[in-house]
Length: 403
Image 1 (cartoon, rainbow, N blue to C red):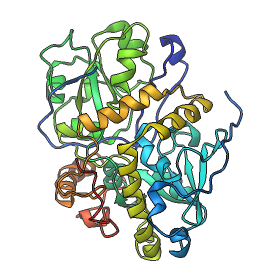
Image 2: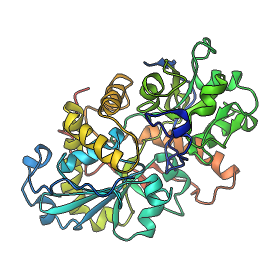
Image 3: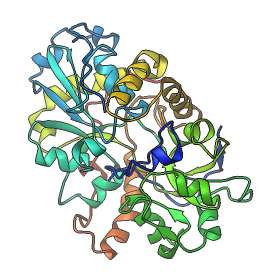
């Protein structure tokens, strides 16, 4: 499940009003990374667009309809609209129809309607995979590899496209207070009892504790997304997202407004694919024609978004704000910079956008599965293979980010 932090551009007191605990975000192996210091509204509907975006222009104007894709095609995200979801909104472009009350963003793409659904509070903090199993209208959902592993028998999914090469899930701290802390192993060696603030239930937490990098006694799982305690105490370690907190703590959080140091869970060995676009296993055969048409469009949307994110980022800022999620174009722009600078988004092992490395994921499965089995996690599948949760067959190898 994705656990997300609240980072609104207002006072700490206002921030504390919003509690957060969302779907799923986390994944890593064993060596840790160097620190990174870094720097209620009524429906406001934009005019519905029927124009084919640059993303889809090279394809038939009815490619998805001709491929038998569901209409509408409902994609369940894991949080409020934000830069982390930029590629998905790029499919429609900045002129889609916004419904903040429903958390729905729709537009015509290649002969069908695509409906992008907000997650987190918009779906009662349910995980996207759970939502896909509960709501028959949801065709695809964002699912982290860690959750795909530990829910392999209870909510099985197959990832067909990954926008993130590395998860932006991280731990943050004050570099002035802890100048010698560089990695998550250092965090474990430094933190006292209850000093690591996290949302309860994150897959990466199971990994960190199971591998002995952290002790369970060091965790404070009462974290609700508010920055107030981190700001007031000054000596805590706290979970966050590199694409959000690096900017917000330096620029927006009253009482802080200085750099934070960070280390990615990915670099501690939890090497998941964050928010990978996933479908139910039966869709791999039942919807093969649709996936063959759609996945290359997703790849191209990622390429287009990373090349020129401003229009979509500006739209996301307004749309997010209309859902009572304080967001800014500046914050979204900073997020896309972090994506590139920290290697969160990129082609990876192959020069291909959106494909996934099964060798890497099998290694994670072999490490993580025994930990979850020992913890009596219900959804663990004995002998799980990467090919059961990842499928690259619909990826177009000619589409590359170029970095």
